[in-house]
Length: 269
Image (cartoon, rainbow, N blue to C red):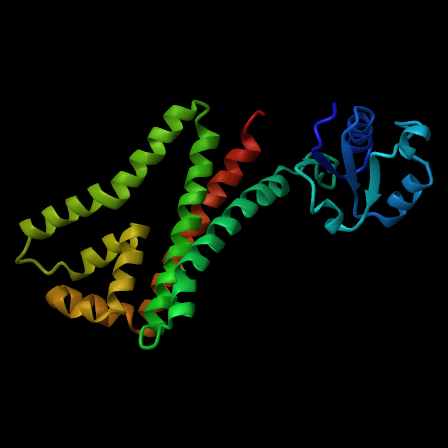
């Protein structure tokens, strides 16, 4: 199999080492990576304590072993063969598996949002809008975490990918569009009633609305929102209101992730 591609095998236990040797036998260039220096030293000497492969296979010219991640820099494919985490009674720790999987996705997506929004302010200069820029970045990251968790929960609950996509798209449409339409109709119909507190509660119940309102409250445009806007500005620019908004966004970010973790533990893979 002379294709010129380099393959990295991450984890050289009783699964990873035979996989690495098999690829090396076929002619592929293979880098075997493990964090255990003792394990790497043994393999370089032709010793496999798991007795899964022969010593001759460990000396193949196309197979190298390393504890340095930089050795994998030129690899084209990465195969992860690390052990499944287990708990104190030696059962698979699905919580750790979910945390690793979801955490990697959520952190990378949030980092993309933070860099995508924040870098223009850093490069171009954000004098006078530093507070609003910070709120925008924080709100964007919180919304990313909330909808990433919701997406994972929907995917775990629904095996049909097309149906899961439809549910996710419908949920976004309801939160971003239909919810505001209903609030607008209710606020118009009850224009003479004191709606500040009900509208505040309704805002906290929708992360998109909450992030949008908190962002607007830190801009001069909030003065155009009338009496209700003044009430919202008074609430969300005070320390108590800011803490309430932050706690609500944090709850929206954590809630779907916790639901996803629960569904992941119960799912029969």
